[in-house]
Length: 126
Image (cartoon, rainbow, N blue to C red; front, side):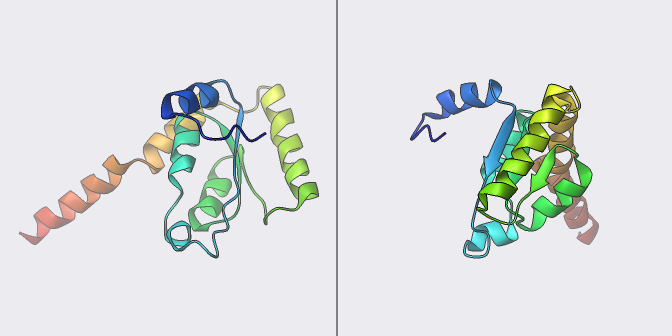
C-alpha cells in the first residue's frame, strides 16, 4: 500500500498503528545506504515495528540481533510474501515485543552512545 506523500505527523500516526515496516532500498546503488542505515529504519525501530528490509550492511547485524527483523534479497514477490507472512504470524502470536525493539533501537542505533564514545576518545587525547 503506497500512501503517497504524508506529513511527518501523519507518518508518526501511521507507524504507531502499524505492526510491520518495509524498507526496500537498492543499497548497492545508494552510496549513503551502503555505509549507513536509512533514517526510516531508526523511525520504524523506535516505534517498535517489526521490519522487512533489503540487506544493507547494518541490516544484517540487526537481523542477527532481533527475531522481528527479516532481510530479503530485493523485490522478489514470493520472498517478500514469505517474510511478511512469517512476521505477521509472529506478531499475531505475541512473539514480537514492541518494547524490546524500542530498547534495541535506543541502545544500538541512537546517537548518544556513539557520541559518548567519541567524546571519551577525544578527552583521552587531550
